[in-house]
Image (cartoon, rainbow over all chains, first blue to last red; front, side, top):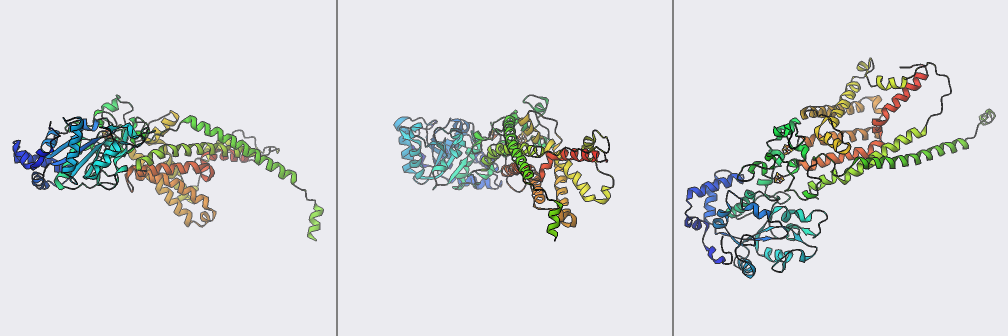
Length: 371
Length: 219
Ligand code: SF4
Ligand code: SF4
């Protein structure tokens, strides 16, 4: 892996780097074709993209990890197109990433500040993990609080990519009762373009695809109202799920290993949150396009949606109440009965007093009125 | 609040409160009705007709002779709407999951396409019945705000359910939340509107049958 405390090596263009590593133009074009398909661009864009990337300087990237589990980094190391190697050796210059970099301690922090100075206004900032606002001591790097490091590093960034549900929406740390006061990157930074790449973790090719888009066009992809690239988060898992015909027919697995489950019927009753989850799992899939959770027999848990941890039990069907119970209904009925008794008592006493107050009219009185 | 948060609220706190008000409201109304009581009928019954009330509960649920000719819209519309509504509420797989979770009982579901057709039938019937209510002078005269409110409260869950099932109008998560909110509105208002006939219809049928039995026209 590259020594990250020497950002000066990054002067050449991507094309030069490719040549040095003996990658032919044909191979590179193939890679760009895969990218265009992934980004839902017309195939003719592949050569344009190849030109653009080859001419581009390797993009300086600073990756900050806050309250996270390293799952997002684990995921991106499984990227297959482009592979992590292609990405960090040929396309970008990963100047700071405290899990992947070889440098440590002061040298590591020096790499970050150097990259910030040398590429001021141009570097891409990638963030995974949420930021604790409760007490800065909950999470620090080299004695610097996450909040301070984010503010300082965001200042000179061209754009920010929030990677994973923690950085995009707060994620697990933010789940009720949110002990650290965790917030998302977009809760703090308001004056920079932010691309949200949610998922717990995000699909590796979605992360690398977003980076590739930025390299090719020098701009951020089209985003939806939650800041997610539309090309990857435009449809729900359910929209593209291969089990969808079974859902439409009302054919559901009842348990994880019944006959219906073995026949590949829909997992809705087992808690699948695919209908309300926007992500690309059903199309790009995981592990080099091998499979995705639903294909391996488990429902979607909605990991790329804001606050999915607090959106009801994972194994409850979407149409089930989150917390209502029959005993709650029973208690309400008892309260209703008590109120009913009170109202009945009131009605009866109204009736009784009306009866008591009723004055009998005699025929003489009526005759008198007639006169 | 994003759409998923809204859905979580709709499935969570909002639903809990709606169910609490519904259960309390229904029991309260039943107490109110029964608590009012009736004076004992001291007259000698004209016919000795045990079970007349119970038989009426059953016979009045069947179409009476001649009604089809006299009131075809009310007749057909009424049956189509009620049957469509029951099929939709009780036999759509996700709905059964709801009852299963709450009461621990479940039953087989109908194919979704059939439920879909039932919902459409119920919606169409509701619209036809509304048009009839407005154009028929007698019905129009008899109708008040309560009738139109009951109509709207019933239509909304059917309509939002249909739209969310077909991913129409709004984004699905939002549409599903709206469906739940419309059901919750219905639950809260049901005990206090004409929709309470859901619970009182058989009580009043029994009472009618019984009283008419005593008056000499036992069923
Ligand atoms: S398994 Fe999940 S995503 Fe797939 S059809 Fe069923 S509910 Fe939809
Ligand atoms: S299937 Fe759902 S829970 Fe699983 S990774 Fe994809 S979005 Fe996340």
